[in-house]
Image 1: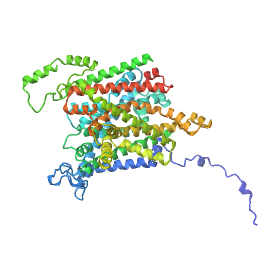
Image 2 (image 1 turned 90 degrees about the vertical axis):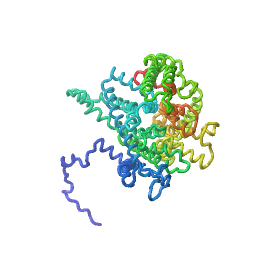
Image 3 (image 1 turned 90 degrees about the horizontal axis):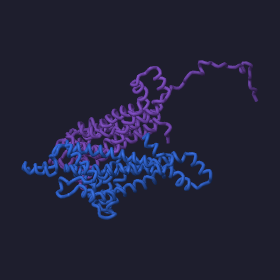
Image 4 (image 1 turned 30 degrees about the horizontal axis):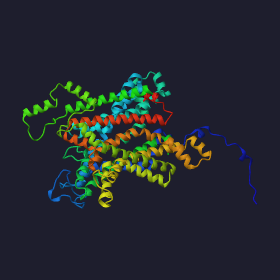
Length: 307
Length: 311
């Protein structure tokens, strides 16, 4: 049995290096970094992002790589099932469904994005002003929003589509007329809550102007809920577009969107189900992808409301 | 309470006035009159018809006349179908839509609450994930796609249910389910998250530690409190069912009000468009009011009078 060799020096205190112990080893995380980390861990949400990116890329290059135009009719090649020549088959006018699907993707995604962006701008400004100034201004602004909110969204859109000349922008404008209200309500609620926080008071007492308070402090801090609402309004807009097209109020021919393609395919559905399958599948996939992104963002940005 | 009710009814009237004004304005702006058709009518006849329908009066007179008759629920004659009053069209077609709508609301509520509760109780287990996958698919599939899938499976392949029309109970099943899909999925998600929250609350722990059975805790204490968000979703639910009927009734060939509305839009039958719009709005505004009243009644924490002030 060997004896443990102990020397006096072993019992000397090593001393604490103050510099060393105070050093921050890990990288500091900000709110957004944290959110991004949580978002990445959510497999479904990442799947959603990848899907949307792929769809966007295909919308850009899908029609060119098929080598066909979305609008070329060919009477000899009507209602062909998917083949090496026509990857998704052809429709009742002999148009290549693959090319049409990706051309339609452009229209559908464009309408979805534009309508949501307009909603975003109007809603954020309206809600922020209403919540920030409060009092009579708030009351009147919210009353207007309430009255508009009482009118069924699709009813207004349909009525407007009847009156305005058919087209892409008509649809976007019609959707934006009442679409901004939910965004405005959410932003207002957030601003109401945030404006009594200390940092706003500090900024105010340093002499910051109202617009500085709004645009530098309040709106950036409501970005989380805004982002979540945005990702959830895009699928609503895409859905509305499909809905309207299905009723025959969509973008006029020869332009195609997923909605108009589904609507066209319905009459021959019994015999050519694939004609409905492709556009309907991509509508569902897009809405699904945006929905899971929205859910993922909500979980990532609001750790309190965790699972 | 009486004051609150009066105030709410006041707002409903203002909203209605706004809706009527807007629809009236839109219909006046719309290109193409009701008598524009491929067949040329002689100018004399056209003038006479315009006279008969009061289209030559000054615009404000037309507007006030319309307001007065709308208040009496008289929307004038249809432009397209001779000898038919808009009110008659609504009376004839609304029962179909009402029946279908109620059935869909019932399906959405019953299955949505059931699925949501199951998911919450079996949190992070297989049945939870199954329900959530179904729910997110349900939200992502538009109702017209759902309707077509249902028709394809149950009518064309399995020949179990009739594919269209509205004659017996069996005819109502497919359209009601197609109409209910999206709200059902939405309610399931809502129910799940609120049930999860409630199950973590202190009073549930108290109930459990008192030794109450799992069933009593979940159904008596949990469900009652967790269902509140679902109740507040009833307003949008009615709106969704209402607008959803436009497409579903068209696909299934149901002679309801939704299809009548869509047809009037395609035909530019202005009086029918305006009449149904006003009717839909009244229906929706009243059901939102009723939902708010129910909500205040179920949840004693909410004082309606206060809610009116800050909502």
